[in-house]
Length: 224
Image (cartoon, rainbow, N blue to C red; front, top):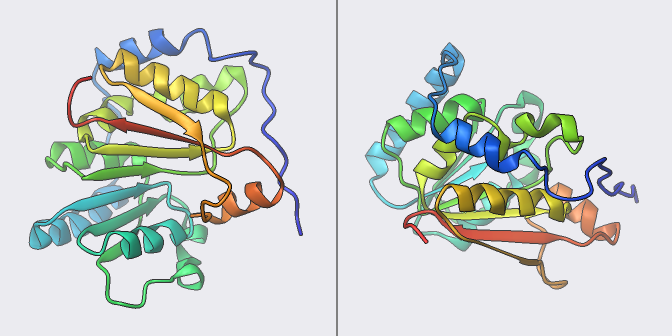
């Protein structure tokens, strides 16, 4: 069995520029043009969302979509949408498909820097928003490449819903909690229980390697 390496970073704690970066992005507009293929992918799934009209769960960075299928099993009353920019991962989804009872879920290939902005503009208000493994960019110089350090963070917050994140890097979630506090929300971080069933291949690999796994929860539908 392949062992997963623990996260290594040159940070001794949460990045000292986290709060300043979040404030800067909250007060500015993300002007990068929307790519055509992301617009098309969003338009197609947005038509499904409007037709459905019920609760939506967004599974961002869904990878192969194992988590998307599992979320659909857990929440059969909702439409679950998994989004990942990798064609290689999305194309492997059928291998991980577990839903057998006709649950409403889709796996979409799109860049979330565009997809989140489009969803926000279209007025999406998902009941839950899940952002699971892996964790981005552990080097200190790469804060801007982490979701909470990027210009699109404002759209993550604006989408609302119950934010659920998991990570094998506690520092990452501590930074997210800082970013949420600056954004007007409180986050709870805790260890994932040992008997929790892995929801993604990455989580399974980390758990089998004996790494501590963490979870974050925040209610973005109201100020706290």
